[in-house]
Length: 243
Image 1 (cartoon, one colour):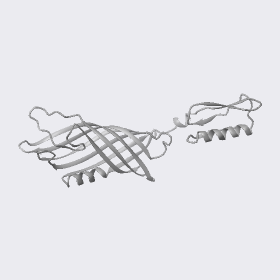
Image 2 (image 1 turned 45 degrees about the vertical axis):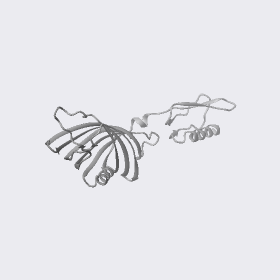
Image 3 (image 1 turned 90 degrees about the vertical axis):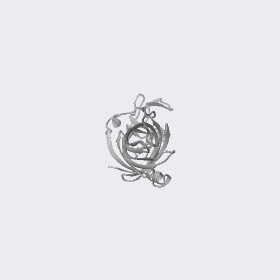
Image 4 (image 1 turned 90 degrees about the horizontal axis):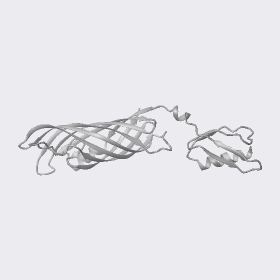
């Protein structure tokens, strides 16, 4: 009995990051097994003693199976992108953005982002004036596997975005244009207090609608994407609340 308890204590130190719940019988004899829930694969330990004993700890997935699929909704408001665009464009580009994500199985975050932008800019020799909205849809994966119950997360994800606007160029008049792009997103979020959290992400954006039709002039700024280019980078810093 004493040897068994010492062995179990040693095992709990080795797998300190995993939760172990073990029921130990009063007397352990040769051939007996002790079963517990271990966040690792099944393993076997031999007990050195006069009478050889084997203790088997078997993983149980019953707790995981009982885990709820839906675990809350997170509302986010982007702060950094609005401030950065206002500062770099001297107020000529104004945008806002909000997002909602759903926490599933503590690891998956399907996300929908929506916003709007107004721009009067001249990134090249042509003056652009336009206003419109955009949305993005995709999902994030939480890479923190050992502590999935925490609201803090390291996230990697993808997005598909679409921006629509009414714009005007000199000698071209006012037209309507929709653009699409894809994004790779890396970021993290930190749990502050109760449902409050803050986070940031970096986006690498690849434009899909690059080639104009015959006689078509393209807007110089795309809502949700930025200055038109084959690819660009974006940064977001947001505050969020889990409901």
